[in-house]
Image (tube, rainbow, N blue to C red; front, side, top):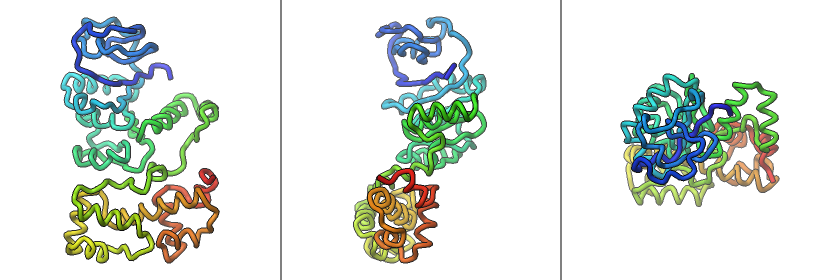
Length: 303
């Protein structure tokens, strides 16, 4: 996409260090047509070559050095300035933490990788994190979940800029859905919920995952953990970022999702296999968690 810049691997290096393959490098330290060089990332603007033109779309990608990026005041200032100047900006995966640190996600709806959603929400409570979203558009802000969700985000931008027909052609070429059915939870494993630090809560999680047909009510799980119901519910949510009931439903629906992909069991037998006594309740939970009906899910993902 014309004008698209990806901010990647923002590193602390000395000016003029490692100046390999700098062709295509702009004064903003972002990759244009060529590969980015470490040297250009941290050089002051006056030491960098002239920019080829204004940035149209600015995306911050996740990085192994995310904490350094998020705590860098020079980068934060630059992002704040650019966010006002560009047509749109956003993040892919955990790059949302860098935007949040710059104050650019306050009061905004955002997506990030499911494994980082609870941490982002806790660290930046003024941000509205949509934990299951593949990508989210809020005004000129675009954010996506994991790395491949960035492709979904890019397709959405293609559709916005050039129309549905071209976006469909691109999707076909890449063998992708133009709009992926369901949310992130459909692709997470049954351990997608945050693993607790406290051993008693972790043991309850393991019990749930191994015994989906058991009584998994809050009273039963609290008794297993050796806590009162109120204390158990509070500690469980604090440790995992979700309620016990949500964890149980996620575990059951994730197991049902995998069975639906791998077998032709009818809905009633699927429901029974994962602990639902009522098939209608199972169907509603499946659609609620995955954002797509069981029939549609099987049509797209069954082997």
